[in-house]
Image 1 (cartoon, rainbow, N blue to C red):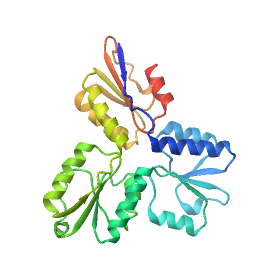
Image 2: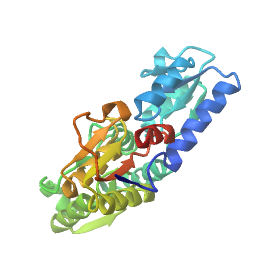
Image 3: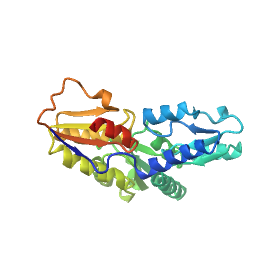
Length: 273
C-alpha cells in the first residue's frame, strides 16, 4: 500500500487566519462568539463551543459585552451596517479574497452594472456577496442556465464564488458572453482553490482509492470530491478517519488523500495513520 498526500490539503490562508484569531481571543480571556459557524468544519466548531464560544445567527440575540467574530464566508452590507448601528463589538474575519469580491460588486453595482455571481445561491459566501449589490445579483451555478435576455443590452459584471469548480466557471462565462455584449469578467476563484483542484485531479488520475477529507457542508471539499470522482471511481468524501468504510480492501493499493480548506492538519494525519 502506498499513500500520496496532496501538498495543498488542509487550512487555506483565510481559514487559518480566522481560526488562529478566535483561539487567540479565547486565550486572552475575551468573551468571543461567532456570527454563524466560523468555518465549515464540525470538529473545529465543536471544539470552539466546548471552550465557550457561542454561535449567533441574529444580531439582536448578541448580548452586551460579547465580541462577535464574523465568519470567513463574509456577510452582507446590511449586516455590517446593523452591527455598527447597534454598536456591537466585532472582529471581521472575512477571507481577504471574499472581501475583494464585495468591493468589486459594490463598485460596479453603483455604476449601474448588472451583477452575475457564479456560485451556489444557498452558500453563505454567495449570500454575503449578493448583499453588497442590493441583493439584486443574478446567481447561476450551471452552464445550462439561461441568461435573461434583458442582460444582453446591459453592462454586466461577473464574479465567482471563491471555491467553485474552475472548469464550470469557464464554461458559464463562455455562455454569458454569447448573450451579453458588454461584460466585465472577474475570475475571483482564489489561488488556493485553483491549486487544490489541480492537485486533486492529478493525484486521482494515479490512484486506486481516493479520500477527500472535509466537512460535508464545505463547498470546496465537495468540489474536490467531484473532481476526484471523475478520475477515480473509488473516491470517498469523509469527515474523519471514522468514516473510512471498513469493507474497503486497501492492500497493494495506491491511495490518494486531499482535504478541504477548512480541514485541520490533525484530522488529515489521523486519516493517514
